[in-house]
Image (cartoon, rainbow, N blue to C red; front, side, top):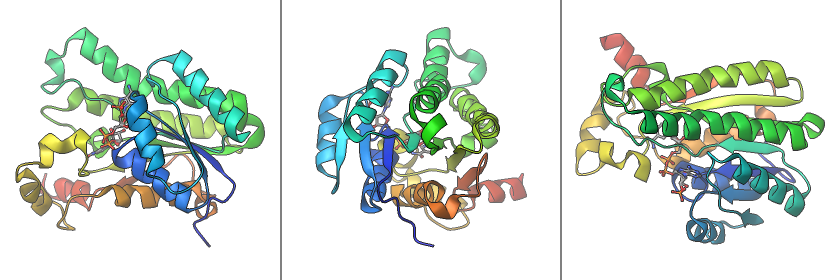
Length: 252
Ligand SMILES: NC(=O)c1ccc[n+]([C@@H]2O[C@H](COP(=O)([O-])OP(=O)(O)OC[C@H]3O[C@@H](n4cnc5c(N)ncnc54)[C@H](OP(=O)(O)O)[C@@H]3O)[C@@H](O)[C@H]2O)c1
């Protein structure tokens, strides 16, 4: 079966760089029309111009419900449909033991990483997918399946996102499939502190497949899940981590 998205309309949050931009590129190559969004208009415009295909952009802060309404309406106005929603934007404002987090950073992490996927999906369902069907893909993390000395707050949101994926998959079937992707360490700005300045080579050795992830590794899986080839998959979390999680479990 071909991995094609011809005629489909996809909305990618956090589509201006990193994993989101690569997913948008791959979807456009597969024939989809794209709406990309992130907070910075200039970055969205530049990203859209770098993608070959029919691509629109609109700035938004995913944590603001008004922004979600505006971008989803803009997608429907421009393309007349919304078939694929990729909840990709996330934040990690706090590094340290979860027990020491302050309330503003706890609330910001929950708002962007968990509340936003919930309400962007609710709007997509109510305004388009309930009638027209569709696919939702949530960007979780292997952190949602493990613990960490410094990323615990972020990991809690990613674990909850895995559960939200299962819950919404059960509720929205058969019209809408909802799946998650849980990447290991991917070489993007978001995770730069973990792989830059030679740190990446050390971490790569801990991965059975001997390297860190690239955005293309995630985009390929996002294409598979959105396409007809993934049409009997819902409620699942696809771990893409070069085998890191199983190796860790073996050692532990
Ligand atoms: N990189 C990794 O190692 C890794 C591992 C596991 C999971 N993930 C997950 O993969 C996803 C993408 O991460 P990435 O590494 O590609 O990150 P990235 O390179 O930092 O890109 C993040 C994107 O999200 C946008 N964004 C951030 N906060 C936003 C907000 N409040 N509202 C709207 N847009 C916002 C950013 O643009 P603006 O700054 O312009 O808003 C940017 O387009 C995230 O869900 C992340 O948790 C990443």
